[in-house]
Image 1 (cartoon, rainbow, N blue to C red):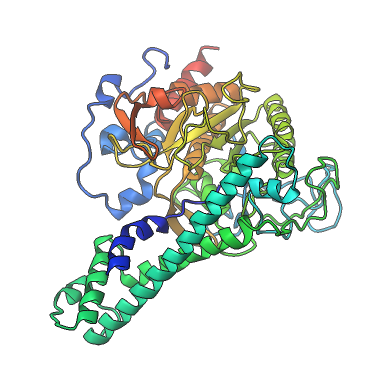
Image 2: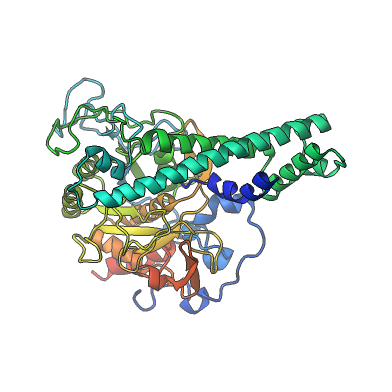
Amino acid sequence: MKYLFKPVIYALLLSTILLSCGSASGVLSTPIENIDTAPIKESKLTETEINGWSHLDLLKDTIPGMSVDKAYNKIIKGKKGKTVIVAVIDSGIDIDHEDLDGVIWTNEDEIPNNGKDDDNNGYVDDIHGWNFVGDGYNEQLEFVRLLASGDKSNPRYAEAEAEYNTEYQKFTGYKTQYDQILQQVTTADNMVSKHLNNKAYTLKDVKTIQTQDEALAQSVAIIKYVYSLEVESVPSFLEEIRNGLVEINERLNFNLNKNLKGRKTGDNPDDLNDKPGYGNNNPRPSKQTEDHGTHVTGIIAAERNNDIGMNGVANNVKVMAIRSTPNGDEYDKDVALAIRYAADNGAKVINASFGKSYSPNSEWVYDAIKYAADKDVLFVHAAGNDSKNIDITKNFPNDAIGTGPEIADNFITVGSLTYDYGSNMVSSFSNYGQVNVDVFAPGSDVYSTMPENKYDLNSGTSMAAPNVAGVAALIRSQYPNLTAAQTKKILMDSGLPIKAKVTIGKNKEVKTLSEISKSGRIVNAYNALILASQITNSK
């Protein structure tokens, strides 16, 4: 589940001008009656507020964060708790990052680099985790694999074919549009900078231009329009368009390429027992742009209060790095074995910020989820970024077939929030579902670690899930006797039950959180720790 394709918004906006020119009583310390009367923050967020908004408090800051700072200041204070292993099943993770290197799990039963499986877990020299993708990176989407197989007897073949045609046409259109935007804005930028004799011009400089030259006037209009999008600068806008073109071309050349042979591990992905221990022991990214896993990891566990970068949600965790997600859809085999690897090697929380709409071997993943439940592992999953109701639309992995009974009690699915408290609080991209989405948490514009000691904002339910995984790790650290099932229930029962109506999906339907999620709540670390304490002390 990659980040959102952000530049598409610019393309759609620019095309016009360019082409024409249930909690226990008393648990919540935040009074229920105050939640929906909290003032809406009207002032623009500062950079500090944006970079840390997911840790802020709704009533104090009028931002729908998870009250993480409040939890540390009033509950955790100096309590370190028990170390909890959190497995991040994702793309490569920069385990050498300045803000992550101190929180990476080390397999103490394995002797580094001796070429032996010292702990007999089936994986040689798995010091910090495992890489099920091996040397691979680019992959097809699952419905493209189905078409490439030629298996027309598959009940979803026609559906896959229709989806392929739609997606290919859409991204071909994006490519044409982005190429046009890049060319026209580049031309306008060159003309304006030449006229001003200043490549680092500002909007104020552009507004001084008075001209009868039609070409220059059109260039000025284009540049003014770019600035109206609240971009930092024209060069930064052009860079984002170029990055968008990279994503578009990857989609067309790799993800939608029926002839691509992306797998490099030498195993049969449709045989769960073929070549056990395939892949390698290097869970790092294969390139700097493979940044998803690093961003997710920082949200959960970036070293706190070290005067570097940012603070993760959890303060006493070790991150098990598991690379199973390529640039495309992950294989069910890799996911199933990654879950089992995490459960077998001591993880108590798994973060799964990935997903797809086709899963040919979903039974392997269901079995792995049940296996993790038997090992008392909480599985935190991102709901997806398609603005769809996943009670109706297929979304994998999940813990139920359709809206049927759950296969296990350790699986929690997370939708995404913005920092804009009120009707726009649910991220426009977030999937939802009264049965299949359990809670909501911050997922839009979340600041976190990026490869090579960098940091950035990114959006997606991929960011909401690790926020919840971090809170789960806090609970399991401070109250280690609580089970995965109890932790899930605490996360759901202790959240803030927002009653206000919100808009969701592409058609901006008006719903309440209780109509689009099982709990009707947004996760709150402060309240979760209070409820965890009460349950622990009542035993």
